[in-house]
Length: 405
Image 1 (cartoon, helix red, strand yellow):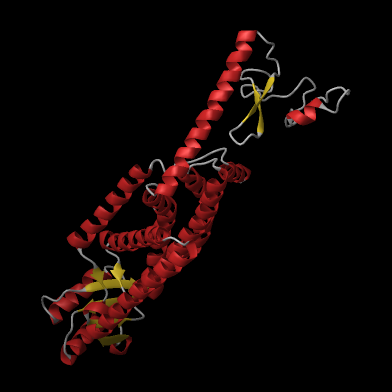
Image 2 (tube, one colour):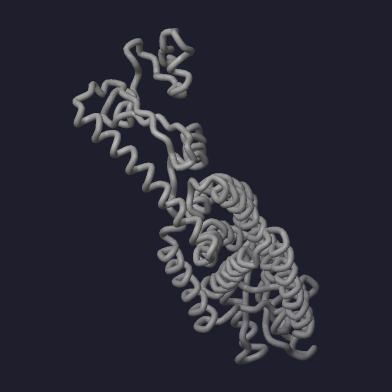
């Protein structure tokens, strides 16, 4: 745990860094591949809509003592009562068999109840049937689409006002759509049933994904504003630093959020059986995982891609690069001067000024205390920070102060 904490501190300080922004083309390619797989799942296998959306008859056989071969036994009973009917058979808990078929009349439903009771050796009263019309699921779908449209519109307005740029709102919306499309595609590829609870889960993951994206974007705004003031980092560099600074926080938050959902999913699949809880857990688990990915690896690189062509950003980046080049040339010139004079470079430090006129102490490379030697001094103690050149000179007619230990 201490190593992970140190790893997070290194990412925050910039000592270590994942160059997410520079590798954005690779990340885009990964997302495109995932979305293509999702499209193949939706167009190829299709979505497995629950009975609430397609309509039909649901029967439940309770208090079953012998559940061996329950699926085949239930299908054979349905085939005898209603030939050619599509049937879905699942086990709920330890002793309840759920049978879902297409719509049928009261007489057919009653005959099927009697057949299931006889097959599983339970009284007819233990077999319940209910007719579900498709109109309810259609209403839920329409309202979910309306809620999605209102949510996206409000998110666009709020983010545009909060961050004062529509490009951040656009990048966040692309990440949101990426999450929803991939989650729906995963449902199609895995054959997971889509129920009203799943639709609620889809809407829930939108809130989680936008929350994580806003946290990252807030740090991006803070770093980029500071970069424009100090001219030390390019826009892409400041944004990449923000991603690294929030990386561990995003991972920790996601793990904490996914653990209880994973437990609910595991208990639901192994003990409780299919139902509202499992349907909701599937949507949350897949959506939270892909939402974490998009907030880190999609939203910020896309934002940089949108803004790096702005005149102000291009001018700032050019200024940063020119400044870095001048500082590097001055440092190199001082190194060459020391070499030509044959000066003793043990601990030699050269005073130069950057373009703002601020004195900068440059230590000769390869010298003790320089970039190639950061070890301890003769007393075994780590060297302290360099004193400012003015402080080293001391008042007039007094000896120079030594470097702090």
